Figure 1 (cartoon, rainbow, N blue to C red):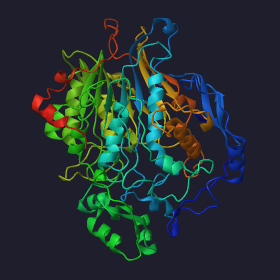
Figure 2 (cartoon, rainbow, N blue to C red; figure 1 turned 180 degrees about the horizontal axis):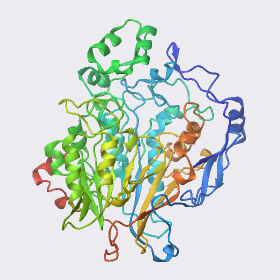
Figure 3 (cartoon, one colour; figure 1 turned 180 degrees about the vertical axis):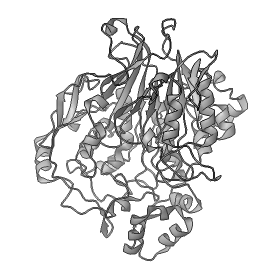
Figure 4 (cartoon, one colour; figure 1 turned 30 degrees about the vertical axis):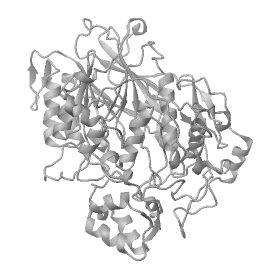
Length: 600
């Protein structure tokens, strides 16, 4: 998506009991309201990617179609050779989903009050479109299914890679929504009691006064058609993406009282120093304060918070096809309770890291044991690399192109908190130094930032040739609600290219043009709800739509890189197929039967 220059005057407010999270004159300002009366510009139903046309937010506050965005050639790490278009062959093509962040907007554990801090603790503690994350994710999956081949080489899509934060608040029901969406199982978006019990008192879009009620109705999503893999994110295993679950937070999550606002004194303390919330005793004092505003909600046992071990186990409770069983996780992950793993495709190896700090806070880091494991995995797939002192090390390992996968990008691997065992954590600069020592590393793919960003990571010691590209992708939880198609090609001239292609939801720009993809689920048109969600998100004054897209070269791009070894003898791999259940990770029959019990 592109955002044309715009001066939004819209403001919104959501009454919450006797207080308001934000002050304003209503969700739509005068200019935006007029634009909604005039309607949205449609005509986008057959578009597949932003190479064709790109959605833009105009100066009038209306979403419409702008021109497509052709690939920008990025040559920071290698020169583009003439004639590569005729020589190139595809090695892999896959979808990158980041931060689906399926959100139980009725959960007692959510802290929407954070938005009312003088300087908000989070720009995402409350979003006006938050009741519609499941419908938006379902629309993104439908579009990924439509984009079933590379627009460049016509290669069939091999798999989907999700880089963490499938859930919003580490809750069981949120993770189940993610797995069930990907599997195409019937969904019940509602939690607690029947009907909407969140903080909004009215629809965020006045054209659809029943929007919040419709958002709670069940629907049947379209399953993803490709094998899929996932990484653990901070929101998957930390309450509100920042706090290690403790007895107090577990009780709040499944309980019947929701904190609406803090007393002025307590709020000032927490707004100035959010680390207070890491102290269970201080948290209990805040909740016990007579001026803390609390509302009764319907309890729900399925809001229980998940440990890392439980998160791992639940990913095995998924359909066998398209698989794979465990979605990258293996018996080793089950046995050891660790969330890092490796999977292979043709000449490529994908090393998936766990960068969530169990001590808390949203920023990431890596434990020392995993870091040592990573170096071993890199070494076993590299015939040449450099040791920590800069000396060349050569061996007889079979060379493979290596892609690193993690939830956090490099600049957000800056969490200094020691882990619960008191051990120092590895941060971004140490990881980057390690990766530069291995020329076979060609890319680092991440999420978390909600930005579509492509960053060249040149090796400071050019003689080693250890340069690579870092690619992060925006989240569909907020505007512009996109995902990314990535492809690696051998150019036949001692260079490789990584191609990035952005695409939007399957939903039309104008919600009135939405066809119901599953007309059998009564009055629920989830495609229309997804279209409304994007419209509302585009008007959210707390978000910066420009930040999500950065520049065209961060969206649709060809990234050149010197081939780290001779690829001429490498066969073009066929379409990636997940291993059969009996082949994945040595999962025992007894463990398989136990894990595949009926869903809760």
